[in-house]
Length: 580
Image (cartoon, rainbow, N blue to C red):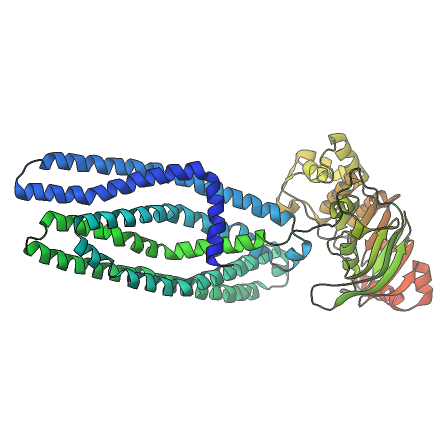
């Protein structure tokens, strides 16, 4: 995205606060007007003192009043600017979060958590800081440059020509530095997102890191990322740091030329000493804003880079459905049918190849197979997190592609191995399945999910607040709450993805009871590594490399031999070894 495009779009957000911007403009005009009046009054005071014409005290009092008014205008300006900046950032943050809720799952699969967090925190902070410190500076700079130029022309046209002689050089240097600086700040933001991602992974995976004694490796990997971030940040600051000294040097050169030319004019009585002093003050106000902007250039570039990344996210195509939402609640009843379904992630290799099977309504079908066989992908396609690249998926004879995604998801319940709980109470987490559920319905769902017993033992029972990600509960307890949440939603089709593969045997028994309640009367598809949990499945599909290699009941597959019996034998042997 071009810088001009990002600035134009950011300006559109600012213009939504037109009245406040107008007030900022008026206060800035007042502050700048006072600043412009000060050099002239100083020169007048000096001439009055040297010439002995009187009025020196009155001019000094006027000058003091001008400084006071300028300070008050500056205070009002800062207060109004804070309101505009916070309103703009508030709106951007809200729109960014809302858009991220509507982005397809593929968007999240292609980006790290750290990168996404960086866009909603660091990038917005950079925009906020840039607006806070640079917006008024831009406005006051324009007023100061135009005002001081007009007054310089009025005071002494010849000296004005000297003052503007270095402007083309100032512009050329600024443009040269800007071209390199922006790309460096964008690279810095990319490396910062990677650093955030590493930190997030290490924090959330702390137990794994500690268990496998990988603290030194984690530190070494982060050190490499941190080193790249340091290099990118150093380059960005070095390039942007060239701006200030270059502008100051040219500004001092300009001041020296004006002082020399003014001294020559004063020595020949073509200008008074007071006029030259006033002109030198205006020359500072003419070149000063340029120098000030140059000193803030790194902040401006960081803000622009942040805005570009924010707008890139806002421009990402949201998840869409060709179908309209159903006017009445949708029921997904009937057989689930996959017909010659194929799927691959992006340009990668196909994950599913010509997969066809049917799950009769109200029955349970289990998916087994090694990692990468395509089990979780089938679950993902049914939930319409992705759409198949070939073939069709239907429920009750209705192609899911012809239905709105939200309608499909509202009738499908999912219990995942990695249970996601949110900040809030136990009651709020269960009610997430259906927000209009009563307390009695929440408790009934918890009872059916075998969760009521342990909830009653919590400090505040259903009103107990959970730690982030349910950290004050065991894995089994988190899954029971997840099952209660799904029960409350009362789905037509149930998807259980590795729902008991990460808990102990006792917890698994509780979860099995809860799942029995959950699956009763529902079409269910279960993914499980523990083959003992799916013995009663009406149908078992054995997947390998994206294809269905075997299908049948447990007894049928055991008699047939092949991959299923081999998996069963290996698992039995592993259990025997673990018991000894």
